[in-house]
Image (cartoon, rainbow, N blue to C red; front, side, top):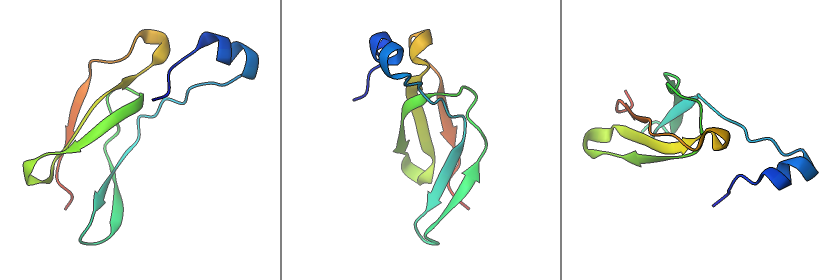
Length: 78
């Protein structure tokens, strides 16, 4: 697991990349489809497939803002 370390940022210039983009994979078509953007840009979020094909995204967040409590669900792929 990657953790935010201010000393690493200071010495290497490493900047965490926060993403709001999301894509849903359709295994039948073997294709990715863009999904609506997440409400809150984040990094290190997890995605879990729910019954019926929906995807639950939670966790992650901005390491400078102590994480995120946002939870989002995406519809099943078409």
